[in-house]
Image 1 (cartoon, rainbow over the protein chains, first blue to last red):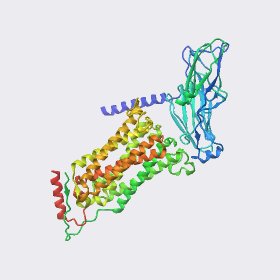
Image 2 (cartoon, rainbow over the protein chains, first blue to last red):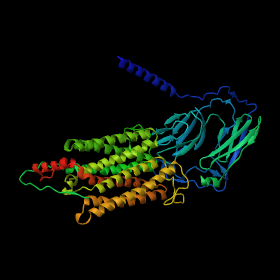
Image 3 (cartoon, each protein chain N blue to C red):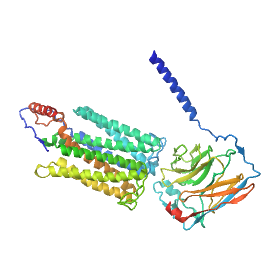
Image 4 (cartoon, rainbow over the protein chains, first blue to last red):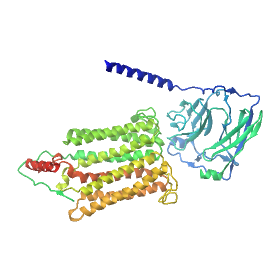
Length: 260
Length: 352
């Protein structure tokens, strides 16, 4: 009798634990607002913009041999290289620039729509991008071959999704801010991408002219960080007044790149 | 010191007992050993090419049944990972057959258990392989997978040895009983297995190039700085020296005692092979670093490590042959009930 009641108690505890575990695993679709958070006054918002330069001769990007997959060879008729250093006229592209510190307790509108990363011609497009916490990331396979997309975060949940059919889509979300989360394809070892996950919308990627812009920032003093996959990071302190426009330029040096 | 247990005299008047040597089973066991070498190579290629997660699901492959996954999709890293799974499945099936064969045909009870152990090991190995994919290659599971692979390989080699006519025959009745060599060989085999575990840890924690130069370490005889990966890598290099020492000592002892007129080829041959394999293995290890982990050099280094282990195991088991009960092994065709009794008495005397 005693053993029966013990079993019933154990079953009850197990059910309660299971129920709480199931409840705990529910994913929140949007980041929660901090108490007392205020909206940014667009009338006083300013902008930080700048240019990312590369000083010296950039290291050569490694050539890619795609012969492990005939489909990739067929889709790329020209010699392919890694996208580590995208330098043109001394300007560095694919640098992730974001507000690292200095934002007060603000609330932000939820991101409009999601972000897509496409696997096309056996490369990731884009190679570097940003996303908000809780924002939908659509992973698309546009290739007539199969890919797996494998995220290797440190603060978020790792995932590894197979997409064997052309046109397949998968949606993922990141629950915590993290700069940067690498992506890789284990089928095609040369495929890699990086995503910066932030709990605010103030991030940008330098274009082929090295230009970037962070718009809609409230007045304040900010730590702006520029991240590059090989050359590392640089920071700048910028104080922004009401309706101010300030510049923050970054220069990555060849020496720093070579030692990385 | 060495003792030789002599052959018992033949007794032509009494009919021989049924022959217990099953050549086909021995050949099959050797075939399983060969397939397992191939499996170890396939597994090492998966790690060397960083393809462990190129098939993200398990036991299916991109949703397909493993055996119906179209070959046209075996591209890039999938070729290695899926190939490894298929070879592993084949070895699993062969092990089922081997275990069943031993269970039904081998009169030695412990051999039946060894067959069952091989089957259990290959099943556990498959589960570990699946778990490491499901949990994104955690070093602990991946290292356990590598360690169990070596254990399974050792079991298959042991089965092949125990089913060989020479083993059953007690090496023509001239079994060596040498406590010193036995202890040394056993310690060397244990040392090699430990070294392989350190190597597997190094491999699965990404510490293969933590010390990027060879034979120096950061340009010095001793690492100039330390972290966990450097410590693992350094342990593997230091372990290689210990293994070299152990193998050299064991082989030298075997050769000094069992060459010449009283030669025991069942000991001198594996001892010589062991020295050669260790030399190749250390060269491959150095080349792995110098080539910045070339895929094939790195992979062959893993396979050669397994061969070093199993060669040492064969030598060790042969030094232990005398401890296996004489009546428990297959009896020679000329053995008579009278001789059996003598053998039993001899065994009992030894046991006492």
